[in-house]
Length: 43
Picture 1 (tube, rainbow, N blue to C red):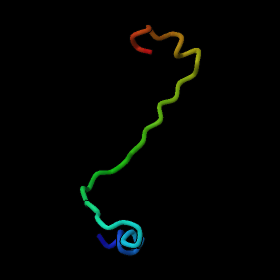
Picture 2 (cartoon, rainbow, N blue to C red):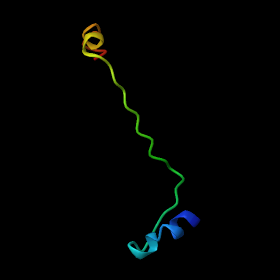
Picture 3 (cartoon, rainbow, N blue to C red):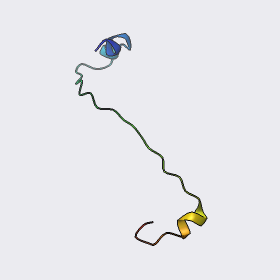
Picture 4 (tube, rainbow, N blue to C red):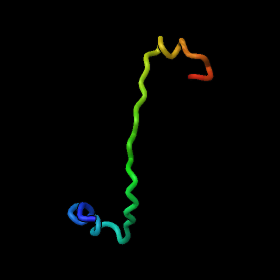
């Protein structure tokens, strides 16, 4: 919880839950020619 204190979240919110979840976005990129080789179900 030390990071929350040093970031001073307490100044803008009354309550916090430390759930140990992480936001990890993943980007999947593919070229148009490759996409066109896939079946409609795979697309």
